[in-house]
Image (cartoon, rainbow over all chains, first blue to last red):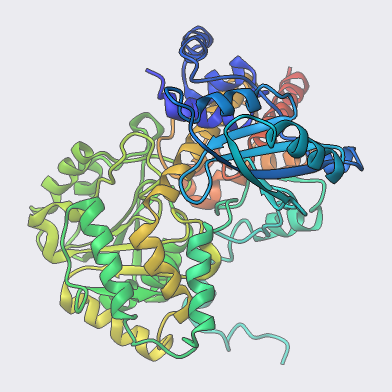
Length: 162
Length: 396
């Protein structure tokens, strides 16, 4: 019997592990493992396999905005209508309904501050029901998706008698 | 003065130097190119919340001695942990002493209990300090050699045969360094049955690896038998389970008069354990269960990867279910464990430890630690297969 949480933690940490690798680590057969992964995919518990990329290293021009959006809820549809429309934009990497002083948190990635400003102006502010926006820009990433950006991984333990 | 032999005490001269010192020096010199599966300590860094508790104590100015037996908050947190994990209660005021690692506990217990000539039963292969601490305290080690076919467990008849009227105590270390063997509650019941017949024998249970048990999510221990409670001392610590080796912090728990005797020695020799580490330990004992579990799962994955690698390399290995070691056999390859490890290090640049270092019965075995990254374990096993194939070709 495969512990789903143990499997998910492992695959979340490294999506490139082969089925053989994972089966050895969990002490099961490859067939058992493949069956469980298919189940988790079918149930939409595993939604996809992505890579953690430090885009700032690859693209000199890369900018992330976190945009707070206040909304007047639409009758019958609440906040979902605006959230669904904004989520359709490819450059929106995340969209959350929030508690507190605003309603939606939209994460938007583009080449420059100006691109983000244009998106806010032209695409968000113009949506029916949007009352106001507040835009924050990310200055530096220290940790994202559980990964520290400048973590050292060398093993510098010295031999000791024990 | 060139010859110091007669200046150094007889007992220190009699304890042989560590069999693996030279080997480790060699490995340290080659450092950089070498994959080390030789070190008996976690590769994880101490979980952050535990480190932070230590840092905060420094910031708040707790830079003084603690009470001799440790801060009462730390003793209470540890007793709560023991009660939670082992379902056994101890009085934090009188039944626990906080020590400098588990190793100090081994030394204290030997000096507190042994009169010259007393026998101490040691179950090999085992941690290298058991024999030495007994000898430093003028005791006589009586060795039981456990067998691979018994999964390196202590068998009740082996214990019975080793007991004499001079036996002072038995020291038991499971989950085991170096074999990775564990003893379950049922196994320990059989040992209990022998011990109840010999009510004068003290029992020392070294459980540094208690949380690294892949058979059960609860530790099994001799302290769980009420009929042995008045003569069982548990030596434990945070080094292995919580990845806190460098903090040098452990503890002993047991009957009040024994803990008092140990505390007497501790207060003259050590005074008190590091205060910073004690604050870290409060956090570890109170809130560390989830962090331990995460590390245990990761070790378990590595254990399976290592066992598969050993099987692929053609080495026979009994299945270890504890600690972070495997103890495969190299029998039939035509060399002793010393030579095997030295050649493996020089030819394939992988450091592992000769089994003989842990007792005569460890000969023709090697200790491999899987407290290392999976990538390193896999690469080391590829090299091990090459090495074993080379030997077989040479022998053929």
